[in-house]
Length: 235
Image (cartoon, rainbow, N blue to C red; front, side, top):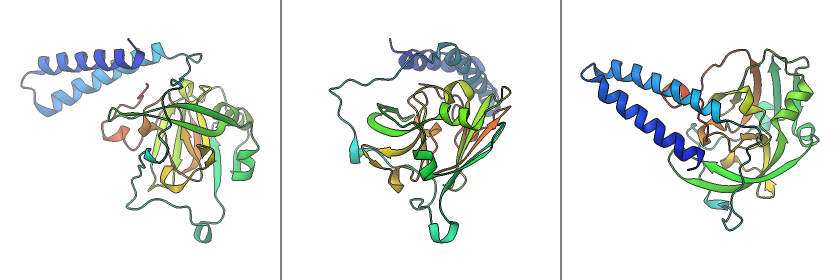
């Protein structure tokens, strides 16, 4: 059984058993029990996480290409307006020795990685794509992330969308800050100018339209995490 299948099955059983035990305590009681189940699931997921575990889809699976869905929370596709905002930059701040403000040219001068990996959606579908960018671990090294940085918040210009990650997942070798998709520069529908992508997290954790990366001592939730979605959301 795959790790993701095991987590889904065990999580579902846990939640169902706890809800059955809830009896007539009502929505508040159910929410407390669901929160407890998510904490237990996170403990399990963290225990299963391995930096040496790499996502590698079968060669026979085709890239999704133009069929890859486009998700954003703004009313229309977010587009960086140079006339109104000036050139796009990516700010690296928080618990770092050397805060940075990177232009796209600077970002592209970092060691470049192209990886063909799975995209796992919380809705149950999976797609394969080839992403190009730099490793998040290289950004952390250049900025000098400090030892007390346990979490990272990824912030965007998509109506202030953000999601925070645990440091271990952010430093996984397949966690990239991407500016390319399928051999081309990112288009607005998929998060241009740059976005986060890693197969170690469900899709909603992979913030598009990046503008700021903040290293933190504590987690601070996220757009979907604050609405009841699992915060850790490992695959």
